[in-house]
Image (cartoon, rainbow, N blue to C red; front, top):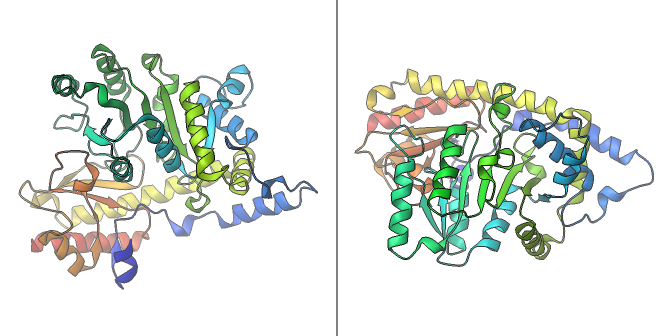
Amino acid sequence: MQMALETPGLLSLAAGFTDNATLPVTVVGDALRGMTQSGPDREFLQYGTNAGRPGLRTILAARLLAQDGRCDSTGNGDEVRRWADRFFVTNGSQQALYLAIQTLCEPGDIVLVDRPSYFVFLELLGGLGVEAKSLPVDESGRLDLAGLRVLLGALRAEGKRERVKAVYFVSWFANPSGRTLDAAEKRGLAETLRAEDCVVPVIEDAAYREIGYDVGAAEAQSGILGDPVWDGFPRLYTSTLTKPFATGLKVGYGACDHDGWRAAMLHVKGHHDFGTGNFAQALLERALRDGAYDAQLAVLRRAYREKRDALHVALEAGGLRSRGWSWRVPEGGLYLWLEGPTNLDTGGDSDFCRACLREGVLYVPGALCHGDHPPKNTVRLSFGVLSVERLAEAGVRFCRAAASV
């Protein structure tokens, strides 16, 4: 991000920022006017509770249960009220992830993570002295459950099996890979962990669940909270209201089915912030209640599909595949995950990176996105920020850099 700001003309495909042109300025203005004209009650400018606004938590619980197919979207019933008490609202979903690891782990503990994985989460683990071990995958990127059994057996033989304290994965349109874990993979993961006596807390990151380009994509499978195969595992589901609406509002949330773990996270959270910002919560509660949030989602889905296509087409037209590069076209999210020729180094100090900088384009080296044994030839490209026209130009520049190396 610093390099992008300090280098005039540099087109950044690195930072996972969202699209400025689609930010809901009018919607936020309307919501703000409605809040300020609603009478003498000014509670939205007052301190909020540590767990978050009860009304917002109820809306979120109803929304998640509907996505998982466990109730309709009206929010009626005891099930919604019961789950609302298990939600807590955070300053972005990153805070929920930090609270989860801070309450579970000591330095030297191990967390099993995606391969590749969300690199900011990996940095979080490193900052707390926690080791990331990648869940094995096959050549297609699907979970390799036989490999997982081998990994857990090796950890047991080394006397480290008891240091495994959690499993973390991004289920929908993952950062960085753009891939969605299917129901069979998640079921197999739960069954393998149980068979290997590794029933540890599970963290499902659903930050991109609602940014599928087709309506209903998020409902294609249930999250872990609604899947009985995970019964007995302490479960935490985390997500955000900001990437699908407006990132500057920084409101995320977690839903946890383990009372002791949730209480521990809220205890630590009170030390962090003395309560999530009440104003942004109130604004989002109103947007969710009156339909403005879903209207904005529809805008973003169209915009990001168009931007994905612009970058993908530019890379194809630039002949990148003919030079040994490969990638899948994601059905949601903000990223293309590229694998270069096997002998190519895409690290931050590589000839390839320097070639990209000469061409005026920036990316995230894929090695940052691995908990262990990182390959040298992968790249994450974000199409969230740039316009369609600039994405096409960034793709041309990236292909020129690839050709020069």
